[in-house]
Image (cartoon, rainbow, N blue to C red; front, side, top):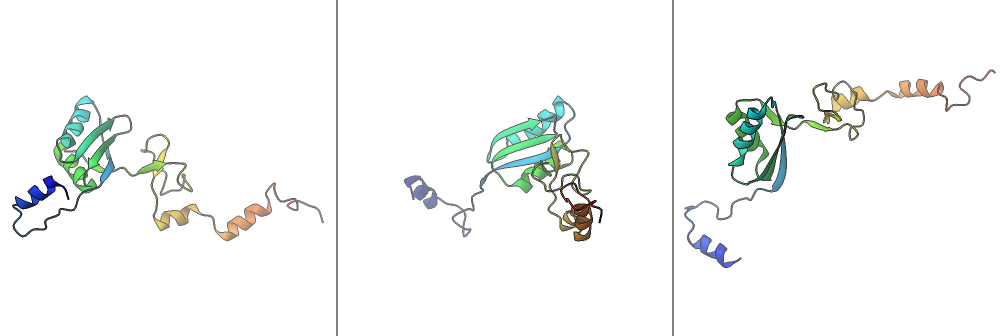
Length: 154
C-alpha cells in the first residue's frame, strides 16, 4: 500500500461503505449500432468519450461497429450509447465465419452481418440443426468416391 493510498484511506468519506471498490477490468466492448452518416458516427463517438474509464473509442461505419476500450462495464456502455444516440444498440453478435463449425446453418447465417462474419451461435438448438444424423452420415458415405465398394458389381 503506497503513501497515496494511505492518505486517500484517511480522508475517505464513504461512511460505512466498503473501503475498496471493485475495480473494473480493462476490456474491449464492441457494439452494433446503425451508423448512416458522419453525424451518426460523431454522435456515437461523443456518447461514450466522456464516460469514466474509457481510454479509446473507434467507429467503423462500414460495418456499423463501435469499439470502446477501457475500464468499463459492457452493459452500461450499451445502455449509454442507446440513450444518448436514440438508436438501438446491442453487443456485437458476430464472429468470423471460420470460427463457427457450420456457418451456413439456419440459426447462424445472417444476411445483415458484415462480410466474413456470422452470428455467434452457442444455442444447442442451432447446433442440432447444423449437424447431420448418424443415418444421414451412413448413407452419404456409402456412395462417396472415397468408398471403393460403393458401386461394385457382385
